[in-house]
Length: 585
Image (cartoon, rainbow, N blue to C red):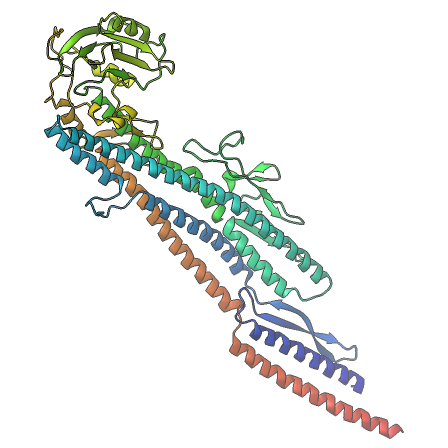
């Protein structure tokens, strides 16, 4: 072996040891850096063409288990979704109120408020003439309606929050894709120039995991180092360029705001390259927000609506069977009608009575509804009375009034006729109004004057005429029915995942609350499980690909010994070279 060949081999050994020590030192320095993986200098032999080989650094790369990395990326998508659901459903459960007794001894949940109405209704049933008992019932029903509205508003606020979150998440995804695209370009260029890109690849892996938390993705890396990313449904997000998402949050959100694939109304679609991917998004924060906005929260709204409407229809049916004492001078319906409308009730007898403040009849008219074809027929029949009149208001409501300010109007039935059915059909004595939990409230008339709450009923006596007792102050038949309404099972339709059932108002309210609690409990358990799973994977990844300072220190020591040995060889070669020069001088 010539001295020059030996020197070349020793020099490459020095260089290889030096690079190895630099890499090991960098590993130690970055041991606590998030996302940093252990770097390894891979050595390769190089033929000197004279039968001897030298050693050189072929490349510096990361010690990364790519299969484990893919598993982590998938786990991060699950974690992002689980964390989002846990947060929102915990807020939903809180919005349902607490069953813990407050300073007045009752809870703030729907069941407790329904029980409070039942308690004051029981008091009214024993004292139907008590104005304070009437006021208590009206106030309790009003409070219950307000609670339903507030919970509904909270559900819709969460939907609006989720919709805003979708827009913010879309922006976050686009920023992540931009950062990944930049790293892609630097890595591909660096590899082409033979540069060390391991740190850039670490940064890209961390950016990828961050992206996966927001949306489920799959990815591949080609031979040039370019990472290609797609949604789990196969829609490209990143290749040689970014395929950005776009979404505009709704200006306002209500119970009727729903996702529309056409984008004409409600929530718009999440778009990529002109394609709506809303229904195909899987995994990550984005999918959880979509499911919460379009499925989970609307289901809770549907349950609240079922409770509100069953409560409204049941209590209104009871109230329309009776009348206040003394009756009001005028009754205005809540249903919108026209004179040409066919009657909603085609049988039975509608009794219209005009009474004075003591309940004594001034005039009574019994209308055989089977002989009436349209609403105008009923209006015309009432207008034949000498002490009352009827009309359809400009906004389409039936109005029946006593002509004298000292008299009042009471509706009922005669004999077996069901006058309450007519009154209920057109809302003449409604206690509650509204189309669902979002707008249920006490009727404006009863809310303004609790004395208008019906506690008794118009006499059904055959041949009732002027001068007869049409109403009595102590009649508590309707008050008793109101009391019984809160203990009698009602039929509830299937709604929002709750099966149809026969139960009390409080029982159904309990099922609604339990439904929200079950969702929240499952979400919390899923988040805890997914968090533990993801953390375990990260720990395993760190164990395999992270830096062990003791191992790196030992490696540095070994490399120092190799460096010193190569340096000794170089020193000996220098002495031999100097001796050779001296021999030829």
